[in-house]
Length: 221
View 1 (cartoon, rainbow, N blue to C red):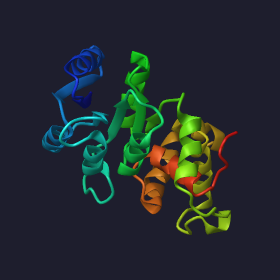
View 2: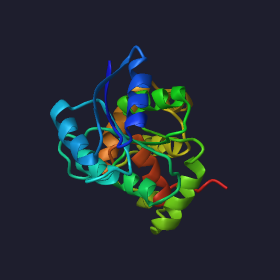
View 3: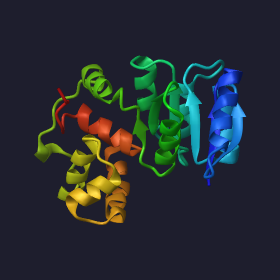
View 4: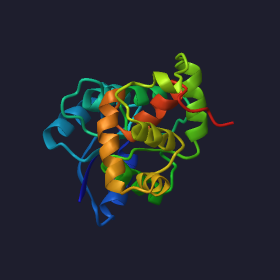
């Protein structure tokens, strides 16, 4: 069972999300809160599998709450899926920098939201497909970092880990990466688990963003 905490300051939206999620046989909403400060307090107390976080909330916004739950230096991070009505704005990049494992627009279809929750709970991360290309382009434009030649990729990465990073950055799932490299899915997950601390990231999504920011892969046309 995937245990979810919902954080949204709009009571109708919050109630709707809770109803949708609790209708799924493998998802259980353990709490629903109205602001970021409460989200942090309750999440630290209940330690859900995923926090479904609105970004624009009173007291503490979703970006800061995300940073407190899964940002750099957090000893026991809790995965966050960010939901918003806004697509390309500073909230998105703030959420990515804060350590969010996924980003989804609120008008996504219910099955897309449920799939995103399951992906984040499984450690795979997700981002709204309608935003992916623009996000990558904006990441490169807003976070300019000198390109890394293959030989300058962190020396701790093995050739196989680099292969996985490149496929990950092109949007492949763990299963698709395993099929491409003719290995077990568990092998891909093991490589990812070792790779992410090396890159100082906390999710597959963060690893993909790292690859684009450092120009390890090309931005799609």
